Length: 142
Image (cartoon, rainbow, N blue to C red):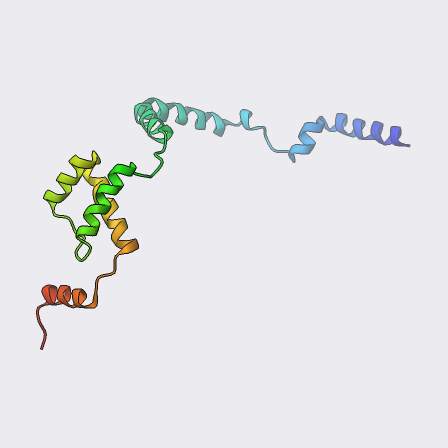
């Protein structure tokens, strides 16, 4: 019985001119035969030729090794020392940042980011300090 069903199925496929592969594809046209796929390949080639330099630069940027995210211990200690000396107002001047960058051998951007993060995570100005800042920004209100 099973042999007869297989033979019947084969005859049906042969008669319709289809193969098992087409039956499984749901009658869709293979992607490589599609004219649209050829257009896509042409467009891709054109874009690659035009932007290949830019793409390779982006690839290099993305494949660069990620940094650990931690600053060297000695540099952090120097920044902490400055922080502790200026805890009431931990906003280094531009001259302080330049000096800290030289001593720690960090970029000024790293110095700025360290202080931004440190203030967000560990500094809460006193109430008096908050009032003094508000007064200086908006003037004394009676």
